Length: 222
Image (cartoon, rainbow, N blue to C red; front, side, top):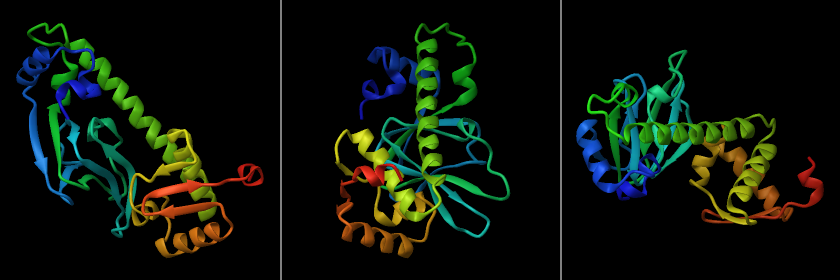
């Protein structure tokens, strides 16, 4: 992804982006699948933006149980300064799920007044706030899913949200079924049994990550 394609640099000319990278002392880092991009508590006040690839925002509790908090796509921002500090010994990490590359910058450098009075500094701050707002929306979406009591209700809520975002009854899952179980905080075997029942009832069909969601009016009111 080129810098100009990033929401962070929207409305900023290419030459200004290059100057800003130097001014803000930004750094680019490449990551392999499974490699930790950012460990909250060790980020030293940095904000990261994923330039390419995909990653997951993961939470590990004191027992080592993994939960997916959000999927991080190219263009998304992440960093400890954009979230609450983990409590109760929990660990929060951004882990690359594919070959990826991220751009890092110091949060304090972003928020303080630019010594060179860069005309594009305020535009960058506005764009960053938009990214944070989008991140908050995604986390709120996950809270909506987790607020449902049963596995079926969680799956139904998640599929409805995916359908709304795609604008169609056919859409692609953002991650594997194993990862989906982590996302909705349930046992994978139990989730697969529930999905089998839903398939048999004609509510859903799944081929790989491709999902067709067929929800009748009675189910929609459940």
